[in-house]
Image (cartoon, rainbow, N blue to C red; front, side, top):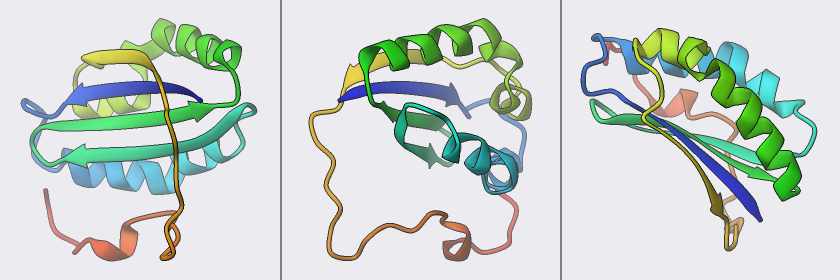
Length: 119
């Protein structure tokens, strides 16, 4: 499978950035990527105060490469970069060896797993 990782540093991001990123993903980004042709799955990952990341799996290397090329052109001005205050520190193609769905399934959002507090 054809993967792509896009990572931003949160080390110098303003207080509340992770909270703002969660809201952005739930309110805008989720719907955008739910309709992206050629995308199998996308996850948004974060480590508070360290990094925020989009991990993608595409149907083909050509689809992945086209998305990567178009994103690299606007990466510094993307919504994530604006919220964080800096461009991604990593945009890297990779191989996804396997994906498994465990017996507990997936949740589309971690919204209900976070308290309403400032990050």
